[in-house]
Image (cartoon, helix red, strand yellow):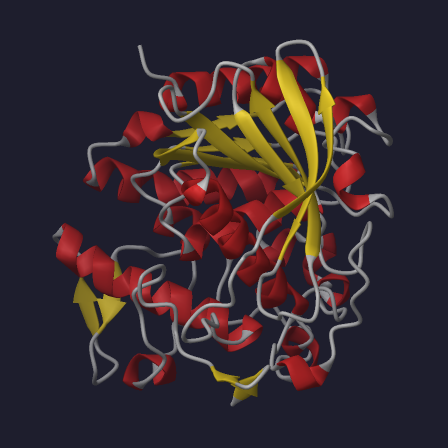
Length: 360
């Protein structure tokens, strides 16, 4: 398969798995993390972290069966970041930038916030900030429009982080109609790969400590954050607000909302929107993040992502985190709110980043 004249391969340095024999293995339950399937399809109890690594590979493969493989042109397309505008604010600057991800024919636009104190001699943590479903895309987390409660790229910049807020394909300045010729099997995977390149940009920036990268998002950005972190271990701290529930509890198992070109059409065409046939679920993905710190911010009145499915997910993933002696790294917060990011929930989320990303 070709994409812009370059071959596709699995991103070995990021997800570390290959679609092959393991792709044929089918897990009837995505809620039981106590075993993995061997090459004969037999259950093997998970007793060690190495055993879990095998199951984690199967989880990523299950995701790729619905999303398509993670692409990496060889060699990667040069980012060639350009700065189009710089605005000096109180204690930090805001830059409008653009860069390539998978094609030299188009550029992704994003807002990059840099603390005045950050530079070659004093690198700081960075947070990738992914927006919700909104026509203005990156402008909302950057504080240039939309809901003030979702200005988290601006909020976190004020707390001293480098933050990057890019457009999701088809939003903001990112005109994209998900053409089949680009080789992606889902809009989700297109966004995941764009986000991986955004992490490339952050890790190469002179102001960023490449070992302290986080990611946050609300709604679309909430599950986009989770999906990207599953495949990119460079993301060390993950916060999802209103981003997920178990598929069986998403509008009572009616999955049509996941099947547009922006998401995963194969859930419809291959699985007939049946959650029993989908090859992954969120309890597995969250478990796959272990032992990296993860916070699920899940309002009890969220009509999009039913909160009991979040509680199920955290309960199921907890033993995996505990296997890594990282039980306290898996956290959840259930504010009394609707599909939103109220002040008290934001403070919990921002404190979570401070706990795990700041250096004393």
